[in-house]
Amino acid sequence: MRLEGKVALISGGARGQGAAEARLFAREGAAVVIGDLLDEEGLKLEAEIRELGGRATYVHLDVTEQDQWENAVSRAVDQYGKLDVLVNNAGIGSVATGGLDAPKIDGTPVELWDRILEVNSKGVFLGTKAAISAMRAAGGGSIINISSIAGMVGLSPANGAAAAYGASKGSVRLLTKSTAVQYGPEGIRCNSVHPGFIETAMTELRLSQPGAREQAAAETPIRRIGTVDDIANGVLFLASDESSFMTGSEMVIDGGWTAQ
Amino acid sequence: MVAIAPGNGRSAAYAASKGSVRLLTKSTAVQYGPEGIRCNSVHPGFIETAMTQPFLSQPGGREWGIAQAALNRIGTVDDIANGVLFLASDESSFMTGSEMVIDAGWIAQ
Image (cartoon, rainbow over all chains, first blue to last red; front, side, top):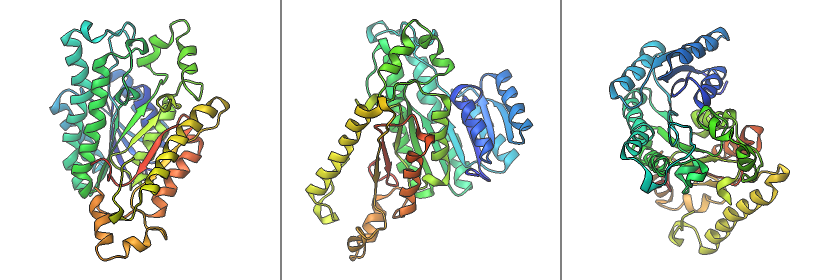
């Protein structure tokens, strides 16, 4: 198994890409701490993984709260002995409506900007800050930060992405490189993943609009929308020792969207 | 992805050729994606191979290579083979036109 003996913490792990990662990690031998705000869904996933013989623990985690991050890392260390892998997966879309009617910059309320940056950018900073000492104690580790193609190129509101979303994901891209450079000598790796259009709860409303799914597929060279498993496979590779010479890299999983 | 000085064992022609591979990869991805043919590029950093052996065996060569890497080591051919395996497999079936940099953090700096 590819993550045999490893302990992983996944933020936003109760559903969507995070849940796909939790299931895959558990199948590959890792003990998984699922952090999320969604207690009911998180506990359900914990039970599902345990029934299949895997090791999983749910912990309530608001990624904007430093003490909750410290608690989540402590749970991993107390229950499974250490922390090897952190997936900073939690994130919010452009607007509460799921990416519909994303505002342009001059129509963006300051509160919306602050909220997106707080979750998507500060949340990754706090997760990394909380995990470093445990990873150092484990003799190294792998941090995977979920950015976006919106962190590589400017997306228009027509793509459902507000400028704040792009700015937050761009900050994740570079925070990843700082983490890689600062902690590489201690054997702690850090890479970013940049999903394209993926079928998740975050994109569901937008993709369900008439013609939206067809348009997204048509704009993608591989001619389909991605699945959460497409992302989970990439995250697994980065979490495993197979990628032990990779750090500070950007794994773009977008069906060729940004290659155009 | 970045230019490397001749003193470090790389000519402009080498960089130009590899830059062309980077973009040829993207053209291939865009042209043949609709037919289900994927194309990605791999960008190794300093790897222990026959090609790099003359440079790495020079006085200070290996130390220079290690100093560029945030992970403080030279890569092995298996480091690259693992990435190529991932891209060859169906695990990466939504990846095309992407750049997989396997360089221990050299160009992240």
